[in-house]
Length: 509
Image 1 (cartoon, helix red, strand yellow):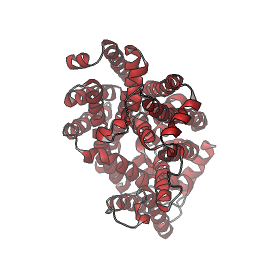
Image 2 (cartoon, one colour):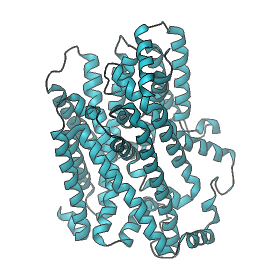
Image 3 (cartoon, one colour):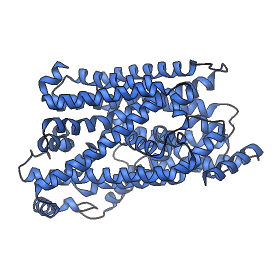
Image 4 (cartoon, helix red, strand yellow):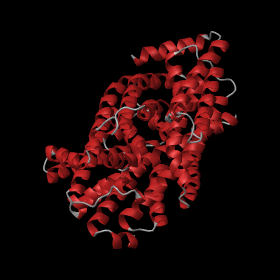
């Protein structure tokens, strides 16, 4: 901690230490509430609406909400806001149509506690291929996903406090591993609540104080228009061109990813009851809307204050300086101690996502890959022990990858979002709303969606404009088509599937 305190003011250091200690205490509390594998993986299905909603939101947004989105809007203007629109709409639809039925159906279909195990139980897959393949996809992608989060944590300490990158990433990884390994799903969910509230408060307070410093919204608009009137052009500086339309469609398509993100939809499975999804949806979307609006205001007010000379000009592209607008405003506007908590909000965004991905990766190892390949039952606390060992092993691998800080790992984030959304999303929706889905159709759709993303996402830059759309869109559509076609060809009536489907629909009403 010496390097930390040398570079940061004592107030910021104290605030950051308080945050870390709080996360560890919550992890210990989660440990006292964890007695079996269901507790470790889905909290015994006892999450209330607020915990489920804030946990889903915090584990979803990561550092993008406080750094990536404000940075893009700061640099280019409102045209970069389409991705936020797509994500907000996608999240609302996901809570509306997926949450209640997935909660009821996952319990009815073999009391499933992971997304792959639910898909396998829903279609009565006799081969266990769905669980094994889906579990391996989750394990591989999330190992790199976790690694990118650890990279972000190390970079945060390096850029903010001048700490050595490797020391920073080790500190972040150590704290996250500790409370995830000890407290399991409950610790992850409860820390997500604290982290989500920190993010929300920071995204309300920072732009509000900055707006007062800038002289109000009218003054901000006038200042920005005097510098660059295209900042408020929602279709870009040249209006709606064909290339611009493809870009907007790609941004909106991010919303499709929600239906297949294991670390998000597992929160639906953990609700106390299906009917609580409505209250959770209102809390979650309210949190998301306020956070996104706060991020947008941070960017616009920050740009206006930089024009006025109150903060440095961050429009130069070297080292992605524009992504630090929230950091710069937090340190400039608040006393040291309060600024420390504003900075901790960014770390909270990063850590909440990493911990959620770790617990889902652990569940993929224990519940899907192991149980899919082995006929040996786990007895007593063997499941929890294996889950904790899996968290540790995945964390070590991810930390080794993060040690070298390669750009390819960071680039996998958007690719993995598309991969999960296209591989799992259509199958999850069909499993909840189409009783004729077969295990062959589900497996075919999952494979086609994943392969499409892999191929489409690696096309050369000079392909025709149509092929430049974000790979999640063709992957999602081709998955739907393959799952429907193969299911139609292989469908045979199954009274057990029909009975479970009808019961799940009834309980979700």
